[in-house]
Image (cartoon, rainbow, N blue to C red; front, top):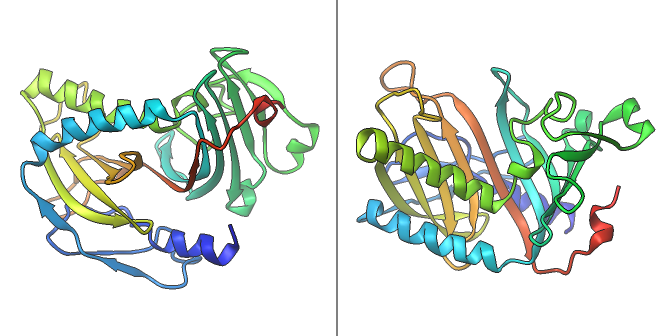
Length: 267
């Protein structure tokens, strides 16, 4: 993908936003790189609470049919209580045997940091190369949740990808149903990275010890059913304000079933 084309996709990404109104302006996730802001209109959908479980089931089926995929992951997460800078990563993912390669390309200070996990070699070990001068020594083997691997993310490599994202949403729904009888769900038709999606917002407005987030948002592509974006937020600290971001991940520039082989995950 040419740089201009890639940046046009980034321009279509929404910023971390609060509750969706009937009409909502979408601001680029990387405003400094985007040529222009993109406006999109969110059209509310009825019966979102009934629609979400059905679409999640369809999404599970779609993900299960994937052999592999490549693309870019745009993420921003809170790590050890502090928000990270927005990162853009190249992603290669294979389902059987499960393997993933993540390589940071932006920001420049982190460019070159790379992590590979191959389930056929280890359930808990990854190969990791840091950015900068330390990366000159090449890849080393670490526990998947080692501090050196987790410096810039809250999720180890085996918790990255579509299946893991769906699990976060499903876990939130299950926990809220068990604790409070369910969560409020709102949906809207949306455009994300140039494709139609259904954006579901899940609100867990009553705190409890098992609550991960006060609000989660998931974007499911209308055609492919894939979960292309996920957001999680704390509860607002004051009325009329948005909760602090816990994490967001966006998958763009996706190419599916490209035939990734063992050499794509050997370090």
